[in-house]
Image 1 (cartoon, rainbow, N blue to C red):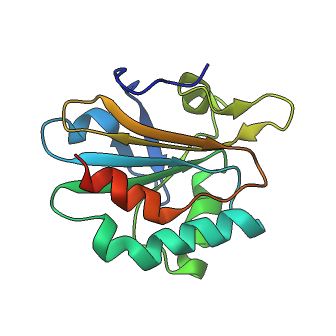
Image 2 (image 1 turned 180 degrees about the horizontal axis):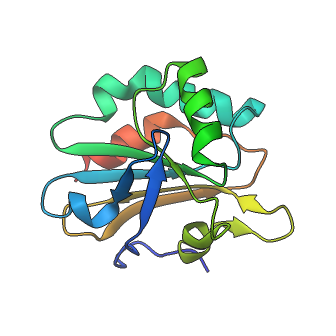
Length: 152
């Protein structure tokens, strides 16, 4: 079941594309978080979505907001993906235990072995304030993220 708006966001610690640990709770009291789950690097819709986030990064990520993107790829894959696409925000690996965090947010597809397209806007208190969950083939609209962050 997908985490509902108004619920506490499950904390996690994952490795980013540089092998550094990133904890959601490190942002508590400091920044709102746009948490974006996507299936896999180097796939058409996923690449389009993460590049659209990069394009909007100056408006989307700032002193009050941090973007974190999560896939079920290894950190090594994410490093090459970020370098090739010019991505300047953390790509987090939910590789092992496979899909553990995706499952906690209710966006893991057991049949496909990957996360579906779930996005959660989490406030500085660690509460989910907005979310959208799309199926694997359906891209999300980054403008919706901007509107959700602007409403905080």
